[in-house]
Image 1 (cartoon, one colour):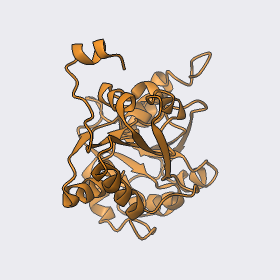
Image 2 (spheres, rainbow, N blue to C red):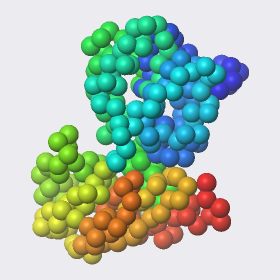
Image 3 (tube, rainbow, N blue to C red):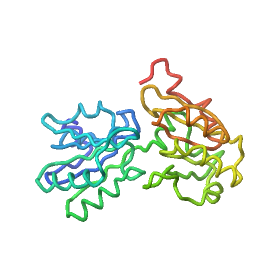
Image 4 (cartoon, helix red, strand yellow):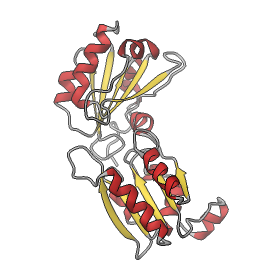
Length: 264
């Protein structure tokens, strides 16, 4: 980002000894925030996840060191403790550090854990929110998470807990709680989740969708039903977001990206 733009927007600088935890958005590099771009142009070290678009890294300032942290299903990753320790170490050495994470760092992104580690070590930090896949990714598929005519609530759920097993929730309450359910990292347990929701009273023919490579080149939306969700998820790639509810029907009208002649 050039200085004139940063000055016009009154953007702060990434100072030495600071860590910025920034969200890169769900895929399209254009969805990163102005603060995220500011940090890219100033950081000495950038610890980035696999989900952050590689094109963003070309905007790093000359001489910046890029450190790959992984954090994607099926891809070798650094241990969370190693990442947090490295952030603390680099900041205490006086470097300007950017932790670039896919989506939003505080939405199922373990940004809270990293911020706690920094706070405990006395390292100053800034949180730079990003566009989360459960909102932005679905918008790229033409599925609004809320619509005045269909729902006034939405529930965001992670498909598995820290132990790698199905999230321990009161699924009957989840089923009743909101007309629209958005599931992150749920492909492995999609069939089991669908069964729990149907057992709690949600109709088997309720619309559901799996958005693969959301907001990325090659995005694909698989439309199915709650009853068919498990089979559809098994046949889909790992990088996906799942949504259940009436709003899925709006994709037929609003799916703008997949109807473009050239995707990008």
